[in-house]
Length: 67
Image 1 (cartoon, rainbow, N blue to C red):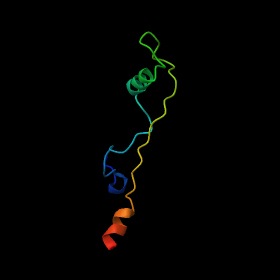
Image 2 (cartoon, one colour):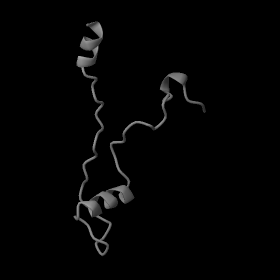
Image 3 (cartoon, rainbow, N blue to C red):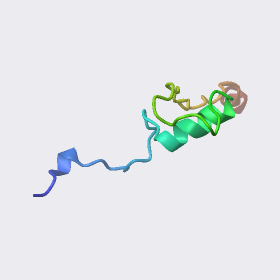
């Protein structure tokens, strides 16, 4: 079976993900010193995913061009 063209994702999986893999979660917990090597990887605490925000251009540049 094929996927309808309207359902295909054009960019692929380049956007931010809302879920981390276990390895990514463990790495982030190690960096925050909330998990050590001897601890069990099962039942690890939740980790917040950081979302990237686009920076807005300054309006000063446009104002200087008009003068």
